[in-house]
View 1 (cartoon, rainbow over the protein chains, first blue to last red):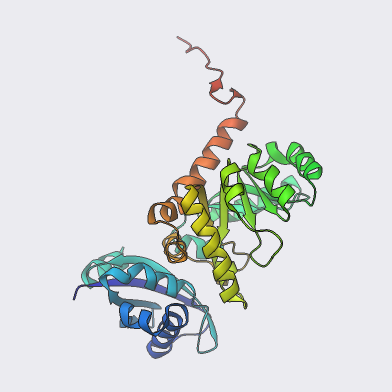
View 2: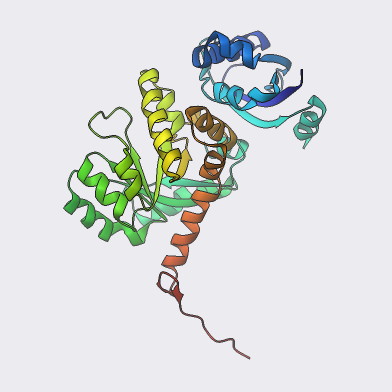
Length: 102
Length: 215
């Protein structure tokens, strides 16, 4: 099944771990779209760069807009206020890597 | 905040300025954003409880700002704001139960309706606000009114990228075209039209002074 990948820049005062960010994404999808939405969107953090605070989140191809909306509504991860900024959306991780290096 | 906006990919922002702010303070504020590489458009939010007062405020402030927005607090004010061509944007407080964006108002609207999505949806009473905004989005979609989407942020934590705001609006029920136009072409066209209006060559809608070329 084809996928879409979101490049997310996570701005926070304290560093956030991959697990903390991943559970914040899943919580937001579940809270806003429900369990069925969670299955349909199927979000997964595939890469996380703690030093640069950037994450690549995968989802099903038709659900990129919904995942983006759910990411927009994240305001904290494990009690730490965060600002998740979606910098790019692509069909391959390689293309996002190019965008990241720009 | 300016740096965060730049990081989110913006090239221009609308600054809501209180009406009492001096020209020096405004210049300083614009300089902060210019240093971060952001263009600024000055915007004023007018709030009034009577139509007479709203018309007075419009006479007074229309020519001083790039964008004039009216907060609709009751039906009389909303009706005037929708009809008046000096009004660029109207917006509603989702928490205010006494006034909603309705079909008659959508028919009257000459400007655009603004949805402050992020600030409205990150507050406590989210389900209620979701419901109100979804109804307003459905009306806007049905009547094909012009929509402007904004984060309505007054704090760095509320900054989101334009594509995120468009995605959120799509999830709220706006069409994809309306959502994307709401963060790009619609606000840009409002600013462009108003800057043309404020130029000395402008006479009236569709009429401007053209100076002969000097040879």
